[in-house]
Amino acid sequence: MSDAVRLEPHEIALLGDGPRAAVTVAVVDLHLRGLAEADRPGTVRRGIGDAVDGPRPLSPLAEAVHARLREPAGPGTLVKDPDIRLALALMRIPLAEAGLLRYPLLGPTRAARRHIRDLRRTRPLPAGRHGLSHDDRLLAVALHGEPALRLLVPRFALRAGLVRRAEVGGKDLLKHSPRGTGGGYGGYSYCGGGGGGGGGE
Image (cartoon, rainbow, N blue to C red; front, side, top):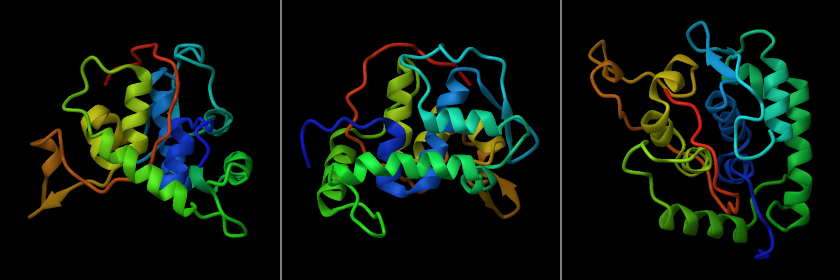
């Protein structure tokens, strides 16, 4: 993989765990900017924030997700939306050209998988959410998936259907433990700028 390739968190998530992970990163990006809020259980709706409230402009994928949120939608619905699928397809083109996705099925190449593993190892899950920038939070979600969501945006992630509700013996564990565990997604080769603290929970 070329060292000149610079990936954004949603691209990292796509390489690491596929389209749903990329859409999840886009939803979290919108939430941190105040552009997305949890609605009915398991759905997201538009917020009232400002699109410029972040370290950089919205990605085309985040713009497509935001446009779809004219009506509340769950993660599964978002991934199936034609405009969002188009944004994901367009994301894949430069990744394939950079040798990170192989034709014709567009799965990650061996080099991409190795790079993702290295980045997960060198950038572990943060110990907490305080003091993290907008970019730091997106990176953690791209790299570590559900554990990062439960740590960094636990209430939003649960209400929006981005994480599974953990129940044992009929009890909701997340009511007692704000830092539940879960599976991850994502990989990372992120060279973004610093910047904005992002929205809170």
